[in-house]
View 1 (spheres, one colour):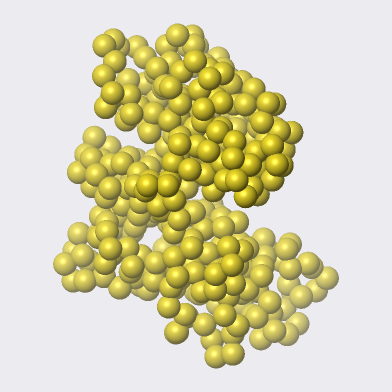
View 2: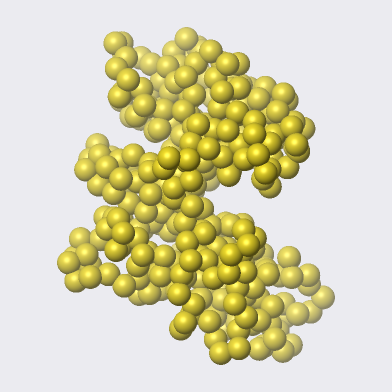
Length: 342
């Protein structure tokens, strides 16, 4: 444990276009209450991207008027897939498509450049960790939670006793690729949804933006001839417009989000029997929706989650807070927790 007060940790959330940073002090208080973004340059290769991560740390320090010497550790999160120690997949990934990134140790490279310990999580786990600590605060170590974050794919994570469950290879918490029952979720004649990972019928094949574009919207548009989303709009663009239609009560859009809520409910039913968490968090674009719509969606997720009577009495369903900042903040929490255990 650090032997002096006045230290801070920095958290950096690495994305395809921008890095967002934050700082957390020794007392557990966040020192930045807004986005602190700079370009990430990940598509320009490791060298420039690592320099951008260093610049992100320095940008945070400028904003909080602290010297580099005050930093005891840095938390980093990136999109996956990656190992538990921050080695990116040897098969590439959406954000790290260039062969230069395949098998690249992004955590180690940043640690070497900074000369500071760097603690790594994938972005879903970082957001899950922040949601958990935001809900439980000083009591985080006494509780568990599961977070499902609906974005282009389906991310999230498991937190047990206040710590992310990473697994032996760092692949725990890949909730999007958990197979779920499709009976009663799909309509008669609706094709079995396919995931980009190659599976059929996993959570991400239903509950993600990609699922809307590739699996759900094509089917429902065939059932609603003449719908405005069929009028000269590509499926890619139409998928991004579905949420707005849902907010306005459009029947087709609500059918889609009902199926997504069922998928998340079935995922949480599995979690209830496997980890029995205290809180089930939902995050993603739905969090940014109009309040009446996100409340409707969360209520539908809860309705489709089958919990035992004893669990219903103690479990809660909640939205991931501060979603745009959740990754950076979760990364900072991970760095602080590591430091306090050292």
